[in-house]
Length: 161
Image (cartoon, rainbow, N blue to C red; front, side, top):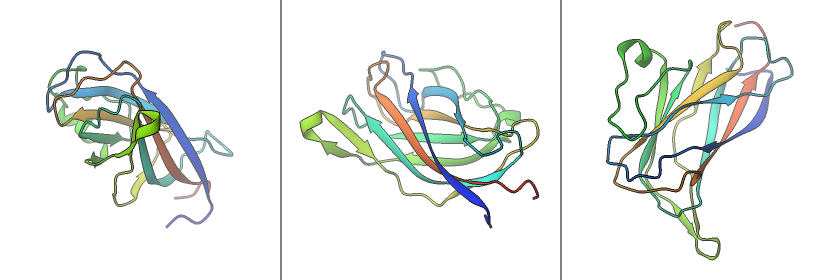
């Protein structure tokens, strides 16, 4: 239960390869989602409540977002996932993006996947960031900056767990 929380919006531009992906390829390697807080050096807990994916290419590619508590590699971009057992121990959730809404006038598409809140506890070793990587689930081509991720995160600011 989160008692003394604040809500923050975390946004990242996803850097993509411009060569066509195959289903099962690493879409983008692990990126930090830095969580703003009143005291960024206190280990904290929280939950990801909402995710929005903005597709400026309107490619509408199916994909999985893999969330981690540590900065571990998912594999090489535009190659098959090669997650080690040690890295897999840091996975806290996988969110599938299966549908988009077209914003025709702007030439964009937006996805807001449905998922249960992603609960997390950060440690002394990493008190300020969650991490996310992506897996392509179909064959698409993107521009280098064609996807943007926004996450609404609730952070507990109490330093007692």
